[in-house]
Length: 362
Image 1 (cartoon, rainbow, N blue to C red):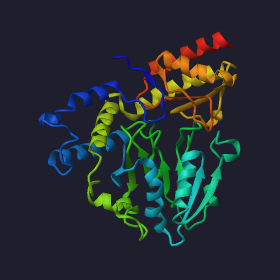
Image 2: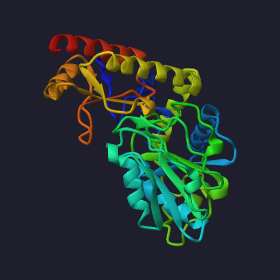
Image 3: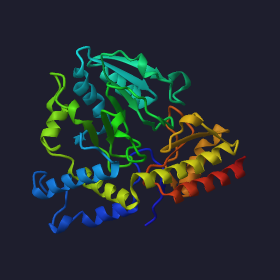
Image 4: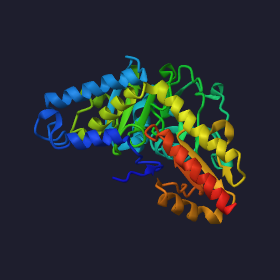
């Protein structure tokens, strides 16, 4: 078997050991003589799996008991509607403030505008989202229901290194591309959500971490399967849950625990990112696209000084076993997504390829 180093932004690579375990279990899970995707989501065996997954997530993330864990269909983008539907009702003014730092933050804001009075409290659009904008929480209206941000911007390669203190106004964070990649202080947040397809498993489902006192305040028109209370009351199973995604998330959490947990993986992630950024900064053949103060540890974005070489770089990299390095069309250039499952060896291989390519074409 010839496995490449997969730098795709998502669906992203998973650890080989996790994939092998899934392969081993696929036809006969837990000695039941059938697959986990064939058993009832109402069975005691599957309910035990969900409960174990809850417990693993609380342990690995350090998630307090006052947060509910919800597993919801539709990935992160469905939460762009679910968040305003569930939280705008916290205040009669139905106001929300969005911090716009890239494509997905913009999509979330546009969706929320369908349901209430939404403002852009800060944006870095004027510099093509290459930085995190300044934001003063004291400028928020007191009747704001919540503040929304995207913690890491996969397309533009930026992240919030520090999160704003919004006081009594709940802070909502889309952490699709970095949940469990660094330690969080959950006291800062009201809701955190993430699609699974970066650090948590396959695509198609989101995990939502919501403070329990924010549940049950949904707008009257909220569909039942977008209402957080519906999921909280039914242990995330008001209808048939994505059973395979929960199973894969369970394996991913066990893998992360075996790596030493979030604190250990955060150190490795910093080492991987530093390796690539140091190379970019030390060689005028490459040009980083994100402001140095706001660089992502999950998505390293850069251009070649000679953009005519972009296609050749991507093609030669793929031939060398370095897959999916083409940058997003909104930025161009090159993007290396180095989520938790990307080993340090993968970044070392990319760095060596970059050196050789620069020497050959510089």
